[in-house]
Amino acid sequence: MHDIEQRLRRDLTEFTERLSAESIRPLREPVASRRRRAVRWLVPAAAAASVIGVIAAVGLIAGGAATGRPGTTGPAPTASEPSGPAPTVPAGLMPHYYVTAYQTFAGSGGSVVTFAAVHDSATGATLATVRVPTLTSQGGTGGLSITAAGDGRTFVITEAPGSRVVGFYLLHVAAGGRSATLRSLPVSLPGQLSLTDLALSPDGRRLAMDVQDCGARTCRYTGIRVVTLASGAVSSWTTPANGFPLNVSWVGNDRLAFEWQSGVRTPPAGQHTGYRLLSLGGAGRELLAARPIGSPGAEPTYYVPRALVTANGAVVITSTVRNLPDASGSDTVVAEVVELSARTGQLLRVLHTATVHGVTGGLNGDLGQLDQDCNVLSLAPAGVHVLVACFAFGRVDGSRFTPLPGFPSASSSGISGQQAAAW
Image (tube, rainbow, N blue to C red; front, side, top):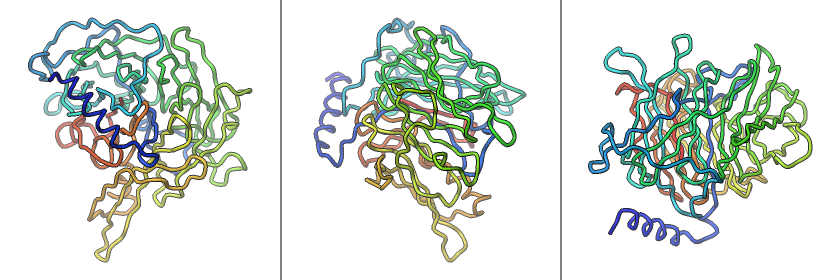
């Protein structure tokens, strides 16, 4: 039996086993960034969304059609860029591929290099990998960011050293996943605007991004820009309120979910930190006219996690982290990937739980780092499949977690935090 037949049979069987209102909730894909709940008018450079970078018309090096080994030269890319909207992965099916990007060192004490890799979603096997020219800014590297369309084969990647975007690139994975093409997009940011998150619409037609121009105590400009890729036309939603949007993602093709981060400790009515849902067809361009939706309760560690919203706008997928001190003076950290009601913010279901014991140092030590290490990364266009990094990278199918390969650890020459994944 061919691999694709085996995969289809497995996915269809898995889907039919979950035909219940409790277990099937249509999801969509995103992008996002890490941050703390503490007041932030300056978006840290390390949290800026971003990367893979500066190449036009570069072919991903296939992992070898016969061997499947990464780093070997495969057939030349033959797939052309689709002109119409990207077809959506059938409801309930897991996308065939996920793409990761990470930065590492070239040898002992060597320069920083960037890689992008196409993986088989079922097994995690690397189908294709490429070394990407790494852009630096004042001696530092930008964080990595990838966002996917609903076809599971179209991705947009960017790099933003020091929060300043240097370019946007469209990656299209060929059928079979053994090669891909990368081309520059005619998208740019004017003036002093910096970017934190970006998201490609499910149909692949529009790119949304949150942007800011922030000083030491307030943001001079803050909003969300939506660019139509075919024409370059831009629509913007802004606000004079002190704060900025983060964690933008699509809810279908006509709405955007984002997290509003207030810039004051006691915000006025209508400006409180939390998740919101913006209708792109509504009148006006006031960002905070977007209605609030369910958000997690107050976190003890100031961290605001990523959140993504289902295609119907009814369910928020996010993470929570809590610490349980013990008699020895250390903590047990319990992280959960959860579903919340968008209407009430109440917990609907726990999808995945990860626990770390013996954590020390409080908020300024290990605990202060671990509270940022459980995030939802990407949702399948429609179905129960979620890519997560929750003390370990992997996928959640319904309530089952499967570890997947994707990033080297910092101890094996990986650069902590400089990594991203999407499907």
